[in-house]
Picture 1 (spheres, rainbow, N blue to C red):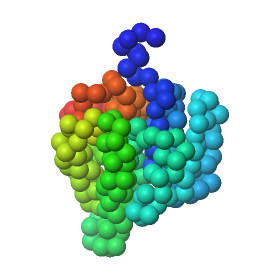
Picture 2: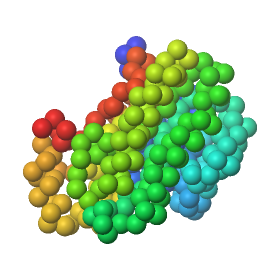
Picture 3: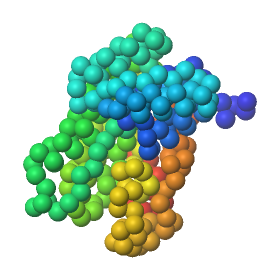
Length: 257
């Protein structure tokens, strides 16, 4: 393997991917496994988590395990981390991917809906990071990847819960990157644009959405799930060792305009 390519090698690394049973989480988990990592998948749906971990293990030949877990529960987060350490003896990578989106005009949304999005998209990132950091510090190495969004950088109407949560993830990433800068742990965020995930499929055929894709996205198309993998491997590997507190946009040119 050429020296430059070897920096992307994740052999013997262990990665936890929250919300890794489908969509971007599953794609990133598969990407890391393709580079050699063993993956731990969490989801609130036990069957989906097991199916995803099993498929990835079968496809790439690396151990894959699954946990039913709610990232808003501190007990669940601690259990996932503890059992991963018991199984593998290390945690090298955390991808905080679990998230939800509730859309609508502010006057049609409830406070409870707004708070639900913050709890999963923000509290869950903070809790999982807090649980893995002591183990990464002990090892003197770690990679934390947060799934933010282009909507953490720019606005879009009818998205106040989601945009607020992703803006918070952006700032958490910056603050944590600074806090951990001398520990051997990096903390970065990927800011995806419009990917055709299960979360977005319900609005994909909407005429307003189609006009937005053509008008706002320079490439005039949805992102394919595999197109998130390169950024994830970069930030999870030695290749991204001089990056921390960074936002990597994968958005087809949306935020370039």
